[in-house]
View 1 (cartoon, rainbow, N blue to C red):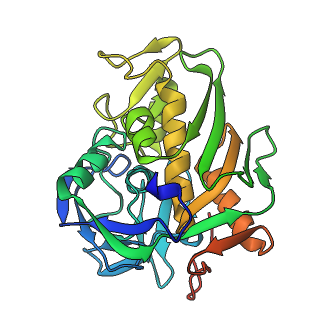
View 2 (cartoon, rainbow, N blue to C red):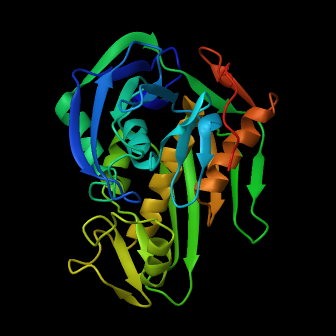
Length: 309
């Protein structure tokens, strides 16, 4: 499993050729074009607003909003925001892509079918190029915990193997979701088989409120699972009996990919969402005794990152 061998054995990867698609933004409802380009070895993942000519690193310290999705922004141009990045970040992490440039001509990544599978399909079509450079791994050295004051929490622990292992639980009482839990080890094969096609979801009772707030304007049963009490409104039903927890785990993979390198750690979360996932990375990197880099050193961006919201 190349992605989780020691850094001197794993090799950095990018795409062989550019590839793109067009789709609607989940929250803006705008039609958005996306292109994924190969990038130089060591460049990492970079987002680019082609309509504004602004680049934004895919880094935890560039996250400015975590309401309903993960949004990053450029510190020198705060109007240059890109939202709903977690699914494409999960696909890149799941495929073992270290270096890529993601271009969009609008304020968010297209939602497509609400999962990471379409992005994984694009990566498959483009092909993967492997360099001679070693992959970078962030090894967690001691436990880190964040919580929201209402029982939800997220933790990172040292791992006995060079791997990212995770256990997550969610609880939506009095709905078709209920209590679900999942144990997962991130490898390309496991991501493809178990997480990639699991879709984002929401409660029917929240739809009107979101629309009134100018959110979820591009949402539909074609790109989200909608739950009304004990009923799944999507005519075709679920892709997996536990699709909800699988998608939340997909979000964990995408959000924690903003560490800028592979994490060698055990993640434990209960009702963790985008906000706690990002706070967990901020807490980890704020403590230099809690981690070390196996490979090139990781440090927060030299330019001041935007304020977290």
